[in-house]
Amino acid sequence: MHVEFKLADKQDAPIIHDLMIRAFSEYKVLKASSTALDETVESVTRDMENGEQAMIVYIDGEPAAMTRFEMLEDALYFFRLSVAPQHQGKGVAKALLHALEEHAEEHGRHKMQCKVRMNIEKNMRLYEKLGYIQYYQDVYHLSGEDLDVAWMEKPIELGVAFVHQD
Image (spheres, rainbow, N blue to C red):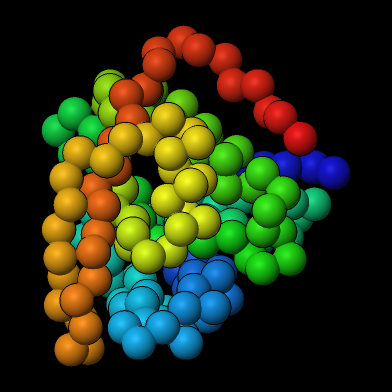
């Protein structure tokens, strides 16, 4: 199996959008489904033209996962982390986040940040297992529903090698 991490450009917007829609489709059944499902290739392209970035994971040449991100003053803030359904549960998200940490470190950022819906327990567990801690909680109002959202953060352990565990 060959795994490759690629920084995306706006021409990759269709790939980014496709991975996001496939990964987030499981949330269609929630009362307040994810706004990721409302995005289009055009909106992703526009966001990338306005400075948003993305990283795509390819497995044996096929797009398997991606995350979008922004460089803040001292942190890399990522969002819409998406793993294609057939690749979920195989460590792809962990590997992607590690590659993103390396990218952040190379660009002088000292921490990783994200927001996570607290009612999606598998995502909360993933981030907690990877060393993210909740530093703030907020309530968003979406489609007439209240959503508890955890703001998560992880300091980047500079120079620490990543060990993939199966």
